[in-house]
Image (tube, rainbow, N blue to C red; front, top):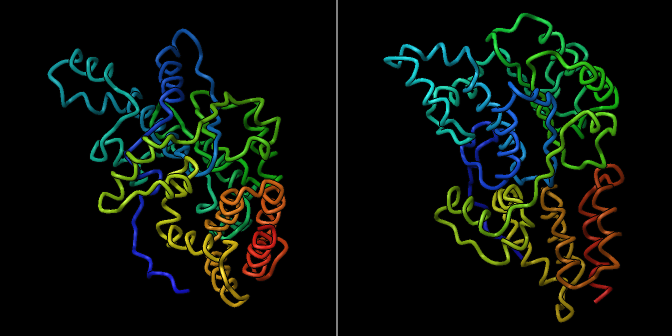
Length: 343
C-alpha cells in the first residue's frame, strides 16, 4: 500500500512569520497593557498557553517586535526620517502587532541585531561546556544561566530587554528552578514571554508569577486563511481541517510528511470490511512511526470510529512511545490492531 512521494514544503519559523492569524483578544490585552504602562506597570511575565501549532510563538515574536518598535532608542534612531517629531508621534500612535517582513525592526530581529533580545529553546540549548546541544530532551540549566549572565551586562539598546522561552514546559527541573529565582525578582524594563504547550506541565510557582493568556485553537476560517497564504496551490479538504484540530502547525506537519494520504490509508486498514494482513498493517504503522508529528493520527482514527474507551489508553501509549519502545512502529502497530479488534 505505497504512499505518494511527499512534496517539499517550506513553512517559515515563528520568528520569520509575518502572518498573525487569530488570538486577537490576547494581542489586544498586551497592546492595551503596554500603552497604559505609564499609568499601570506592565506585568513583566506573560505566559502564552495553548495547544501546539496554533501560533503561540508567532504571537510572542509579534509582541517582541511591537515592543522594540515602540522603544525609545529605535524611535530616536529613526528621527532623521521625519521633518519633525509630530510626524514620528503620529507613526508611533498607529503601531500595532502587525508588521511587514521588510520593516527595519522585523529584519533587525531576524538577523540577530537586537542585543537585548534572548531566545531560549531546544535549538539554542547548550551543555555544561557551553557547546550547542540541540538534541537534548530538555532545556538545560546551563542555557538559562548563560542568559542570566548576559542580562547582567549593561543594556545594549538602552530600552527593553525581552526573553522568549519556547517552551517553558521543556525546561529541565534545574532550569525551571533557575528561572523561578529570576522571576521572583525580575530585572527592571524586562519582558518575559513564556510559551506553554500545557499548563499542567508548567511549574505552578512559575505559573503563579505570570499573567496567563490561554490561546484557543484556530477556527476553520483562520486555518483556511493560513492555508491559502502558505499553500495557495494546494487543496484544503474538510478531512484535513478535521485532522488539524485547530492547529496550522499540524497541517504543516501533515503536509510535510504526507499525513493526509497516510491517514486515508490508516482508516482503510482499520475499517471492519478491510481484508488486510499483518504485513500491510505494519507497512502503515512504519510510515506513521517515522514522523512523531503523525503519531496523533492514531487518536484521530480512534475518534473516527467512535472508540472513546480506547482513546485514553491510546493517548497514554503514544505519550510513552519515546520512553518505552525502542521501535515506535511496534507501538503504532499494536494500537492499530487494537482499533481493528474493537470494530
